[in-house]
Image (cartoon, rainbow, N blue to C red; front, side, top):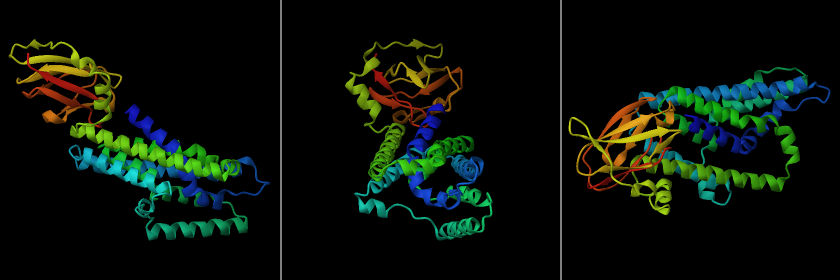
Length: 345
């Protein structure tokens, strides 16, 4: 859970420049105040907008997580991640301005949202001309922001949907929204200090971040499907396979099943390469020494294994008799990487 939330916050923080470019004009319609106004009067509408926006994000995340949980998308999660990864890569390419075909594939806001935003902007200008002060406009802007067809926002929403939990989905969108807040709060100052040439470079850097995030999602999908090429597989190949070269060691339980230990701690496998006897059932004794949502399942796609793991306890996971070879193992979200090597005793 911690790693997932940290990555969501980092995505929000990194993509806040895009938030400024998308929502900056809206913010300016209510944020430009008279010079005689005190700092509280100037800050209040911005804070209201941010709180309303984060509330909108969190609500959408709760709904998407609940939908993912209700439809039991465990089997579909890898393909949701593939869709999210490809979606982010295409959007990132479009954001560079060098791939017109990708830009054309970027979603556009629905008409009802465009009309609602236009009415709010007219009201904000009217209020400013009349000298009236209301926080309803920035609050409404913030609530509608959760429905914007924004590339980073929709990427975060896909993560929330694939989490399979309303709580996790809400938390993902909450921390993503918090990550986007600092730069938006400083938008007035930042926009005046950053040169136009730097803004272009920052947008290009943002596109790279979105594309890299898409590649990370594709890598997680590869782990969950047992695809033979992933960053974990490449890293272990370059390091000579790590602990997979160790001796085959196991014990025989009273029922005749071979037992092999595995420890999960700090969202890592120890050992990272587990050696088991081939051509016979194996009971993997998983000692999970944490209570982290990222490690609550053990998935071995090549063996058809997807088992829930008890926190701070030992869970026996039965592995079917398997031929000699290397099988990838990961968590239910594809964020952990390890392997099981079956060898003939």
